[in-house]
Image (cartoon, rainbow, N blue to C red; front, side, top):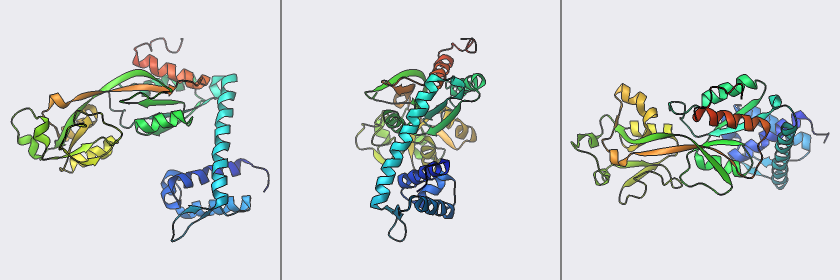
Length: 307
């Protein structure tokens, strides 16, 4: 093989995505490529390396022994590159930095969330800094921070994890919702837990015991999702009662397609935090974006450009 160049780096990044997606078919959505294009690029990589990295066919996608080694070496390579970029950023002007930010889903409709204002201020001051963004659930974001894959996260975590630092930013009200035709709406009084026993509930997921219904016994937890849009689909189907942020459910309330269940005792507030790795010194670019995010949420953004 010739010396590694930019083309090889791109092919190795593609290879990692394929492996972590579980095959060519699943990877095409993440890579935004047709499966035939992915296959061609994998052939290019195998030709460059002079070895077979994976088997693909009726038996499914699986790595060869060489492929396993190249996958591990590639992961180490990209960690080294990220570490180099971070160190380089720390000794040069912040205007040429790079930041990887991950957020939980459906925050843009929350009037208390001012992430977009912080990004606007930051990009005005540092227009050449590049920003990668991901949408994940809070647990995934925390794991990505602990594994060094991202620098900043916006999470709503019920249990803080060791090794992470949490700075409160804002909260949102979570209420029970159902479709406009759901029979729970026929109840002429405030809904209690026992009134929900005969109706399927959308739960937050096994790792997210955060709602007032999470520990309730005998409820029909027939669906679960940490994703607000997936929860909305389930509720709008007419079969489920579930929690949504009031700001996110508003559009369907306005259309008359979704109704807030009369259950104030079962509502709760979810807090959101700027989350970072406690033991890691932030790059100059990440530190500046952190300051912008904290400032706008703490009403200290008036002199942000001159601070």
